[in-house]
Length: 354
Ligand SMILES: NC(=O)C1=CN([C@@H]2O[C@H](COP(=O)(O)OP(=O)(O)OC[C@H]3O[C@@H](n4cnc5c(N)ncnc54)[C@H](OP(=O)(O)O)[C@@H]3O)[C@@H](O)[C@H]2O)C=CC1
Ligand SMILES: O=C(CO)COP(=O)(O)O
Image (tube, rainbow, N blue to C red; front, side, top):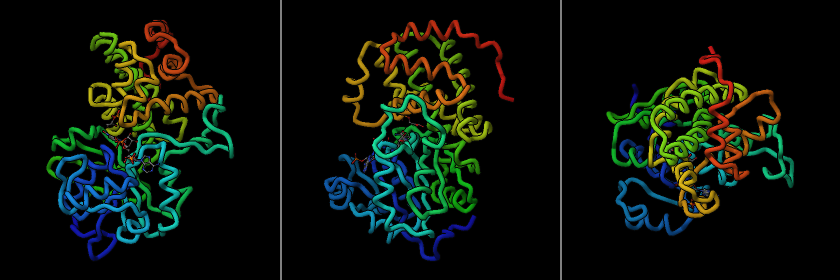
């Protein structure tokens, strides 16, 4: 493969927007091949990177520089990786929008959803939601900016393992083959494999929906249940992801791939997963609000459960794991009751999606 970018003859720095756990891991991987300019909103983070070459006290490569200015990032970089949690995604995208042009490329790594609601409405007021009121991050980028070539990055990518240099793989998905090729060129290494997929919505939704099942997996572990129960949850969870993903506009095939089943297995088994941890701590008797306040990083699945539950109300689809998890998280139903309900649920057909 050509080692030069399709974007420019002279290699420009690659932009990374947001240096939380995942943004930092991706910036460090990119820095093995190219110069990286990161955007952080907090001046103290930018100062730490630029003056000490550290992030949260840990050394990072010298070719990672930082700025608090969206304009600077957009001027210097043609390709930007957006690594912001979904709660801030629309706001950050809007702050970049005035400086973005159609030649820019954005690949995002966010595994959450945003809302497209009438002025003054919020999720608390929405008992039911249509598909058009739910936005994946690629839809936010397309709606808020003039950028055309959009992609996403999703797969079993626990950032702690990536930072340790452990072997892993991801999927870059886009309607534009050059975006996939550029993602592969920049990220592929002997420790990191990068697959391509043209079903961007299906790949985004896979990463989003697996977080619901990961919370449930953590809850099973917190209850002290065994591997049989986990196998049951993962396989029924996959079926639920397939039906939901399909209803929301993704292809079944993507859920069967690395960004779907691959990430589902990883996240349902990792004590480093924030979503798994939420379920585990709930099952140990902690209250959801306490857990959220105590966690420094985002567990996207909590909000996703609320959004998907409201979406289900506008469809004929049933998603018993999501519906019961909603009751546990937001209606005070004990996990043991939800589990009993699921064990009695008439799941009679094993494979009903092919
Ligand atoms: N961690 C992981 O293993 C993986 C995470 N992901 C996904 O990546 C996304 C980010 O996760 P992760 O990095 O772990 O989360 P973190 O909570 O560690 O980081 C979130 C980042 O988003 C920034 N941010 C949030 N809101 C705003 C805002 N309004 N304006 C500016 N910046 C904002 C934060 O900035 P600040 O520090 O200023 O708050 C921070 O840099 C999530 O959707 C997650 O699901 C995907 C794969 C793996
Ligand atoms: O998506 C992830 C790994 O692929 C990270 O999962 P958590 O957000 O649950 O930590």
